[in-house]
Image (cartoon, rainbow, N blue to C red; front, side, top):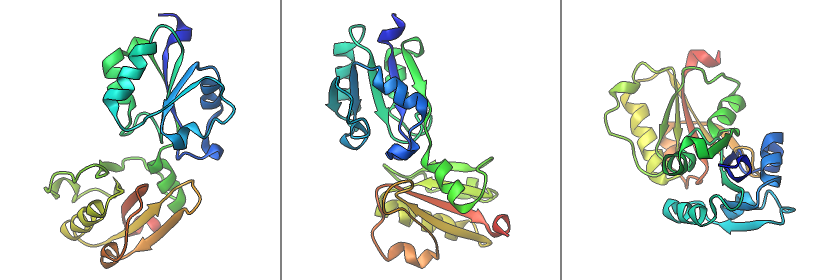
Length: 213
């Protein structure tokens, strides 16, 4: 395939222009077609090519790419980093690695750990964004750093059950809207998780206390 007709999957970080990499900007500028959520498309107001608003319906994204594949250069915009819980996986699975180029971005997990001043080496990363993970909490007992991708009231309840099940000696941070207006990073107690709505862009960090000393 002509290198100019590749499908480029671009990580857009948290969806803030301040966190776009130079490579992301360059690849997006060179694309004939952009596909992504309106929030991510708005990061490129000067792009004069075709823009397709879609970022949730995977089947529709694939169909839109198929209709243009080989005829135009296509940029698929994804939030965070393409390598973490991203639309990149089904796109690459469908079209093949040779037809895709991946441009990394900044993940919400990276930002969350940066905000609390810790590295995320060895962290256990769990997604509770779309549905609760398995109810067996035993695999987490010996973990020092746990990051849970949330965004639902139910995910907050799952985190509370997780924290209660694996024992004390840990602190919990709720990180909302990282890198965006209204960003909030707060250490909370478990009871507070039932006290209010959880934003759709939320990461929970469950950390051993001694890491923060």
